[in-house]
Length: 198
Image 1 (cartoon, rainbow, N blue to C red):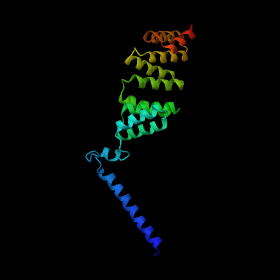
Image 2: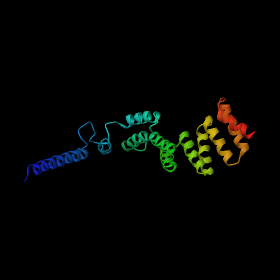
Image 3: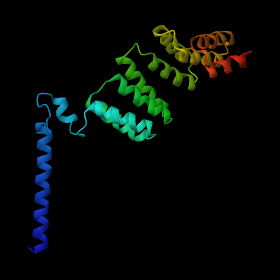
Image 4: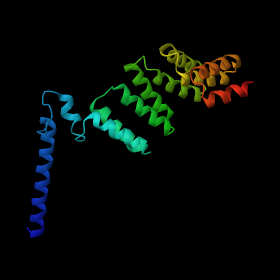
């Protein structure tokens, strides 16, 4: 055996040992503060040292900085660590919608809605995707649900007005724009849309 072969054998043995140690750590839950009583924590906390809340804060910072892909990756990791958090699922859906992936966004919005059925913003977001797809009945159902939760939200009234214009229900659309302006008298977009309708 040459000296090079001996060195390669030693290096292979070292890496094999390190892989064994890593696998054992994953199975045992590790020793760095991972709760050994929770199987979910054993595997989830191996992704990064951040807890889900810290990941969400970091994701929000990345989103504000315009780094949508990085924000999504951080939220995805937070979701892997603590699945079915409606806020995280909603934010993932929102980023996907901003990136133009409406089908995947809709899936996350629906998962978020399963966890928080009384969230008007989730209903609004789902409605916007259905409206973009031309599925007006589904969009109307979600905007109605949003108004049932909070009928004082001018954004919902404005969105509803836009949908009603698409559906050619112009008189109803005018009423929604008027309601949006009653709730927020400096709502420029609602005023502009109302003026277009005469």
